[in-house]
Structures are given as structure tokens and as C-alpha cells.
Image 1 (spheres, helix red, strand yellow):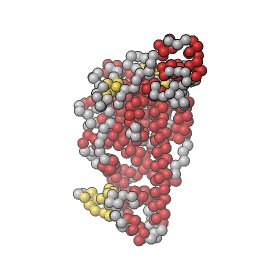
Image 2 (cartoon, rainbow, N blue to C red):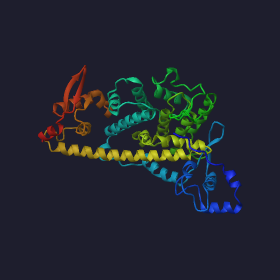
Image 3 (cartoon, rainbow, N blue to C red):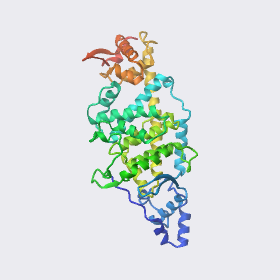
Image 4 (cartoon, rainbow, N blue to C red):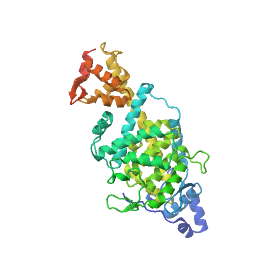
Length: 447
């Protein structure tokens, strides 16, 4: 992608204006927002300015209005200047529903009221995040193959599958370590899990980079978009980042918990402390921070699923900060929109699954042979099976999807096969349960 243009120098622009012209400009454009949006110069310059202002003057008064609201963080750029952020109205508007929806009370549909179903949705979310986060970094494999690998627990084949497998393990790591404070050792452990078996030099997994030739480049023409700080500076920078990650509401400046998690994500991308795997590590660290600060719904969400819809906006949000005097508000706003999109996707997913399961239950209730004899795991499987004739189910996959014992998963599938709803066969030494092409007719015939 093309690097955004850096904004014009505000003192230079204001210096060529008279006092009356500055007063007129500030009266014409009030506040830091442009029609309710927090625009970068690269966006503002393409919009018609208010009457009587040119684009540079317009930008100068917008940027001046923001300057008084910016707060400096104990995190710095490569030159030692502080990373900054502010909380204009769009940030506040996003934070309120996220606080309510991801940390407060939320009513799940009836079918996820018990712990077994909640575990199933968590597993589905972990798989979704593992796949899409890897795809953002270039992994190429079909979703069906990736899901089968994760659900069945088979060993990954090739680098792309290994990336997805590692991301799945990293998301499990987040759940296991969410109560621990962040340390450099913990961060290196997370990176090792994310990159194991995927790097040109295996010894780089779980190690800070020692080279200064790591750059973020435009894949089209190899132009440099971002130059991370020198490797020699990384230990000190990560020490400050860990202190920031473990901070509290008493810190000055006050950083809302969601913004703290987003800024951790940003700084790993900015510092690029590893030879590879920085993006995957940054997103996993974001999940860790959200979980540690009580945003329990994040276990069910996939932010990479939303980012993947417009990856260029994700990259541009990083660059807007760097080209506008370390103003991380651009990245914060992008990520707040991503989180809200992920929450909305979850609700849509739950509503769709709720309808599918109720339709399946209704169909099975008409059958005396099946009425009241199938548990919630079997109903969920049949909801999926009705849409996927010929699909293969294995005991290990069913076990992982519902987080139950092998014996319970085996019993579920064997009973469905005995009832004629799945066809049981052997492939090698493993039992496979196949969805018959005429499953709807078999259910109707048993009515």
C-alpha cells in the first residue's frame, strides 16, 4: 500500500496567516472532528474545505484543536518522542457499548445457557481467530482443511497449517495465562508458541531480533513503510511496555482498559521486536490484555475475522499514527470499530445457530424415534450435518468441538450411527461417521 502523506507543518501554515485569518479559521472549523470524524490529513485533503479556507489552513486549525486533548504515554517512538492519544467523541461512543457488551451482562440465546454449549462456542471462536489471523500473515489453506486439522487434533502439514495450529495454541495460552502479569519472559513464550516451526531460522522463535534490517515494506514495490527501533533498544522498550500492560486505573494518564489492550497491540506492531510473527503475537497479546481486564466476551470473538475484510485499513491505521506526530487515536478508532464489528458478528452467529438448532429440534420432535433422545451436542451436530451432506465426523473432532471426554464423544456418534442418522465406516484405524446424502428423508421417515 502507498504510505500516507505526512500533514503540513502547522506552525508554518499558521505563520503565513494574519491574526484575523486565524480567528476566522477557528470560528469556521470548531473542534478536532470533521463532520464527526477524526480524519488524517491524507483523508482531509480530498474533502471540500469550509468556505473561505484552503486545505492546509483547515488542517492547521483541526490539528491545533486536537493538540490540547492529546495525552502522552510512557511509550515512545524511535526518536524518544511520546506516543499520544486522545478521546474525542467517536472513541467515547465506541467504548460505551464495548464496555457493556464485552465486560458487562449480556443475554445469550437459550442454547448457550449451559457450560457445554459455551465451550463449543469458545472452540469455534478459537478456530476462527487461528485461521484468519494466519491468513492475514499469508497462510494459504482451505478453511475446511484447517478446521478438520484443529478439530481432529492431527499434526499440521506444511508451514501454512503450522501457522494456524500455532495460533490456535496461542489462543489457548491466552486463556491459561490471563491472570498473570506480563513480563518479557511471558511475551517471548507467547511468540515461541506463535512461530514454532514456521521460521527460516528455528532459533528465532521466542527470541528478540538481533538485526536492524527488519522493515515493514510495501509488497508491490518494496518501499519502506516503517522502520522499527534498533534491536539494542528492544529490551528497555519491552520493559516499559510490560509495565504499561500491567498498569492500573490510577496511572497517569488514565488509559481505559480497552484502549490499553489496543495500544499494546499497536506497540508490538510498531516495535516489531521479532524477526517474524509480530502481527500474530500482537493480536494474541491484545486478547490477553482484554481477558486479564475482565472482558470475558472476547473469548467468543474473532477480531482477525473483521480485520481480514479490509486489511489495508488495518495497515493504514498504523501509518496514520507515525505520519501524524505519534497520534495513536487513528489506530484506536480502527480497532474499536473492529471490536464492535466482532461483537455484532457474534450476535448474528448466535441468532443464526439458535434458529438452526430450533429448526432441527422441531424436525426431530415430529419423530417418535428421536423425540427427547438426543442431547444438545448431537442436536448441534445434526444442525451442521443437515447443511453438509457427505461431511466426515471423527470422534476426536467432536470431542474438541464440545470439550468433552473421548468416551462421551464416541458415545454421541455411535448412537447417531445406530439411529441411522450417520453412516459409520473405518479409514485406516480410525472410525469415521459420514452424513448420508438422504439425511432429511431419514429423519422424516422416522416420524
